Every structure is written in structure tokens, then in C-alpha cells.
Length: 607
Image (cartoon, rainbow, N blue to C red):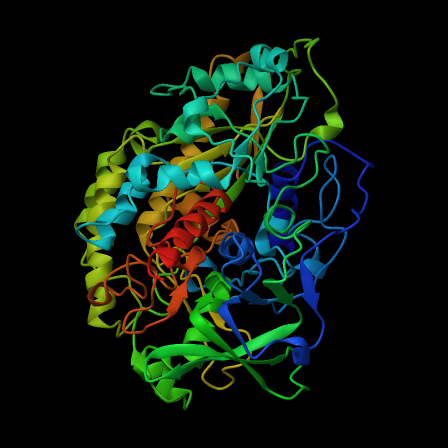
């Protein structure tokens, strides 16, 4: 736990702010109609949405905005008034008051350490507590979504780019600041729709100590500097923060899709738990729910058009499994009648992983230029600069790593007795991943730049797949989370290569006069010793869980189809991060907003 807290403190320093601020204040909330008691819920709505998180509120807003459809959102967590960040203050993923209390099972290949599973528990979900990084993956990564989906998929880069533009309102940086720090952007890659109130913005201040770090990174062999990382390319670039451009408060799903909305056809009830989906045959007709403490009478509500599960990667598979949709053997063990045997529910679990590598200067520090154009440092609320790097740029040994992975039996590192459909799906994932590993535009490493040496290296694609399943002995308790981190040794190879890349960067000629010194693990830790250090220190999550209800064919271990309807059902969809079949090489919030916007068009098209 001490190691975890140390690493958590380090990533919090990057993902929230590097600067002190005492200006955070609670906001005065204006929000859509909030129901306090189950008896206030009508008998039926057009749409019943389970979960008021990043995706759930986006879908609810868009479905209700023209007044044609009524929407009820049922949320397990609570509405709070002080989670908005103003100038770098406020609440975050380190605050236990606004997140779930879930811990993984011991991780065999991480020295049997457990991992806290940090996901938001409040109206707004994880978009209320994340590090506010507003980035996208690369074009080839999203093209992989389409490849895993099968012929005719519209989930490729060209098919999703319009929804990225619709989902986020981009606000460019101050021109003088942009010139001083070489911040460039492509207006054609971003949207600025008036009806979109999720903002991507830059602070008015940047740390001048970033300039020597930027210059040194720009000289690394193979490093490219795209005009804008939002255009689908990897490299060294500046990126915005999910932040209001005027008040510099956190911009997230509640502020963008819930606050200041007053519609008779848009209702939210909090502090209630959906127990299961109701069916007529295999057609979803509504949900059963009760207060989350379980002390109230069980209620039901009907959905005239659809039930939409937006409970997130951790809880969406639990709701499906409690409803009789999932792996038959698991449901039988839990004494849950099987409605549909879909082995992929709760499988294919992936997340980004990271490590902190410590450095200090032993002979002074690189000179920091004076930037006259700089504004208010209290507007900084997250990182805005990073290197997003493909494996061929990370290490000259990239082909050896790829070849080892390509030669694996697809079932070799999956859970024992995996269903044949899961193995078939992983075989397709492996084939795709081999191609991605060989492409320099696949973001394998994210290195957030700070105005200091060392920092965090993040593996943005993992090949070890975990599981999130109900506990057969107590299905209504929190699900059993197993990252199965490092179960595939290729993830060790990639993380070791990431660390060696940082070492090359810190040993570059730009830094030589200042005597960079690796404080942990230390430059003498190499080879197998480095791999053992990784096992002892890896954090297997960057709080970006995906894929437990993956958008893939049923015969490939998928749970939802290209239209996001659950295989074998009618009027039941999943819209959240669990449908992603492959990690984007980027923080996931922008991608979740995108997929929610695209889902709304798919849902409306079938009415």
C-alpha cells in the first residue's frame, strides 16, 4: 500500500497540477430535475439509462434535447457540490468521498500485490475526478476498432472523427503564449459547436521550465512534432485540459450535459441501485431497482424504447451478469438463471499501466527562460505537454519484442479454461496488435513532460487481459476485479523498453552539464533485475478500464454489436468505456464522450 500511495501521489501531481493554488471554491449548482425517492419515478419512460457518468449523462442530454423522448437516469452515487476544479484545486481521484472503494484480487505477477480500482462515484462519474487530460488516440488505433468489429464497421477513424468534433468544444490558447511555447493546433481536427458544453482549453500560464525539457525531447531519434495530436498522429505535442475557458473550472459530463438543463422529459434519480434488467423473452422492457442500501421496496420502471447500460467498465458486466447475461458456468455457480450465454461479458479487461522513475539534478538545473507572455499560474489544472511514442521509436529491439508476441499461442496467457470464443477473439486481437506494435503511429508510451527530471512512463497498450466478474458467493457485492497484470511477459518487455527510453532521454547531451542522476530504481538495475523491479512497483491502471462488454462479434468473444446492442437481445444497449475492444493510446475521457455521441445517432436511427 505504501508503494501505491507513493505512486498515486506522483501521478496526482502530474494529472492535477504542478502548482499550488488556494482559489478552489464550491460552485452553486443548477441542474436537471433530481428525484429523491423511488415513488417519484414514473411508471415508464422512452429510455431508461443506468449510470449518470461520462457516457450516461451525454446520452441522456442528447436523447432528451429535442423534447421528443423522455429519459430517466438511475445513478448509484450522489450529487455533490464541490468537485469542480477552480484553478487547480478541488477534488480528484485521490478523494475517497467521490470514488468507489474497490480493490483487485492479489496479482500473481505483481508480487501478489492488490490494486485499488479508482473510478468516480458521483453524478458525472470518472469525468469528475480524472486528470483532465483531453487527448485522442491515433488513427490506426481506432481503425483497429473497426477491424475487430468486422466488415462494414463504421468505427474507424473516418467514422468517429465527426463525433470527436461534436463531443468537445475546443478553445485555442492565447496567441502570445502559444508562440512562446510552440503550441500549435489544427482547427480542422477540432469542433466548436455552440450546443457542445464540454470544453477543451489551455491555461493562460505554462511552466517555463518545460522549454528545456521540450527541446531535449524534440531531438530524440525518430521523434516527430505533429501540428496537433488530435489529428490522429503520434509524437511530441501540446494538448488541452477539460476546463472551462473563462472560469477555469473542471468541464465534465455534469457541467456539460446536466447543469443548467431544465426539461420535463429529463430526470435523474440518485442513490439507487439497478438490480437487474427486466425482459420479455430477450427483449428488454425495463429495470428493477432499489435504494442502494437495500432497505427500500424493490421498484420497477419500464422503457418504451430502450434500456441503456452506462454503468462503466467495472459495473456494466455485473449488471448484465445479474440479469442472466454472461458466461454460463459463472451464472450457474452463482445460481442465476441463464438468459443468454455470452462468454465475453466481464472478459477482455484492459487498462493502461504506469511506473514512476526517479531522477534528480546533481550539478544545477537547466536554465529557465523568462516568458513575458505568461499569465495566471492558478489556471493550470493538469498536464499539457507530452511525448506519445511508438515502439519503433522507443527501442531498437522493437522487432524482437513483436516477434516474440507474434509467435505466442493465443490461449497461452489467457485465463485457464477460457471459452473458445474468447480465444478466437484474442487471436484476432493479437494479429491486430502485432500490426500496431510495428507502426510508429501507435502510442505505446506516454511520457508527460514536467519542468523537472524523471517522471512517469505509461504503457498505453497492454497485451495481458484480465476479468471483472460477479462474486458467485455474493453476486450483489462489488465485482471481483483481476487485472492479470504482467501475465503476458511481453508487457514486461515493453515497460522495460519504456524505462530505457527515459534513461536515454535523461542522458541526452542537453542534460549532460547538469548531471542527471537516477534515484530509483537506479541505473545499475537492468535486465532481469529491472523486470523484477517492475513486478514490485507497476501500477496496472491509469484509471482507464475498458473492454468488459467489448464491441466485437459474439463468436469473437464480443458482447455488443456495431450498433452497441447486446448480442441476442432487443432494446438493450451498452454505451460506456466497456464497449472499447482495444485501448486507445490516450487517456480515455475524450474517447468515451465520442462513443456516447455516436451511440446517440445509432439509437435514434433505429426508432
